[in-house]
Image 1 (cartoon, one colour):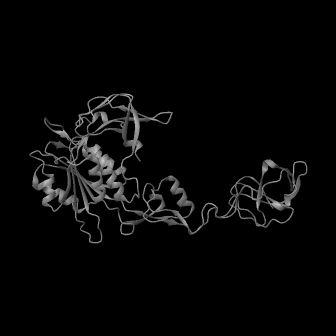
Image 2 (cartoon, helix red, strand yellow):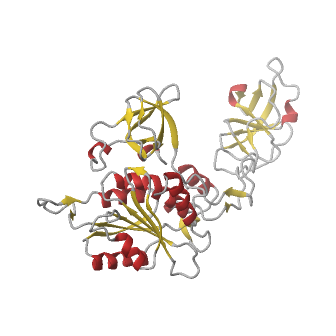
Image 3 (cartoon, helix red, strand yellow):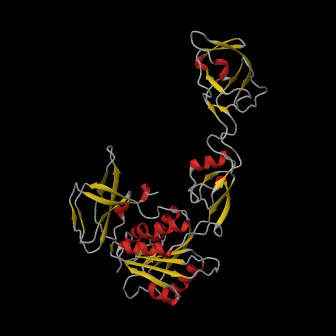
Length: 421
């Protein structure tokens, strides 16, 4: 049985990121949100595109205002008006100025903006009441970005700021990593779909809907094979189908040591290599990790198989701790694959048996002083009780050998859910 840290290291060794060329696709800008760039992006445009004004005021020549002051204002002839979006119709020469508005293009000859609060308009003249600093309130062409240089680097996740950057640089076709394909299946004769009438002894499958949502949150494409009975032939056929169509397969149930736990045996029969079969973690001790050769000779990334426990808390905890980091690395994210941990003060005493690394779920909150506080979810912390998972965003970690952390003491908390990006 591996430690949590050894299991994590083993999984990361098995995962190879999608190839930036072979696994690249081009998509339009309006479909790029939350995708990962598969190549660095550059633009043929400078930004700003041309010298422009940062304020409403007057475009002038700084040399005309060397002796300007409140006591001795300088009068300039206003020869044109330049709204944003219009090209100047003439150049500015000695003794001239142009009325200009924020974002408007500077006319040739002008090199400085005098903001309107420092002026006084008199017909076709403007009095400059204060000497400006040369180049004041001018946004020079290319000051923010030079055409041909790197705009966004490979591996960048595209969110609203990146969409804005790509749009202003006229990058309308975006190279991104394709979405990994993840196939889900649940095993167990006792399971039924949520829309079926519940009979005595049956259990509604909550794992597959939950895992589908978690996979989608990572940006992968989900395929669902539904519930597969504990019949070896049917299970073997379903797993073979899943492997053939996926980058990653995730099953829940069937990986413990019971008489109806067939998954590990079937994986071996199908030619898989078993790397992990149990981890010293609670909940979630039964964890199978296997690999299969990729049928595509151009791809060196093996097909990954994760067999999660069937208990409805063990499955998401196993996903958060082991599967989600693997999907992050696989998807092309360049770094920060693993879970995020913070130190927090626990409001309740936390208890464990000390035999395995234990995860207790609850609410993590950021206080006004910048510290974190952890509030243990109420009710039973059984791996079969999914009801008190609602609104959790943290898993308090009690290491092997630790049986108690008193209230008001510090604890390491793994961030999950809404605060885990």
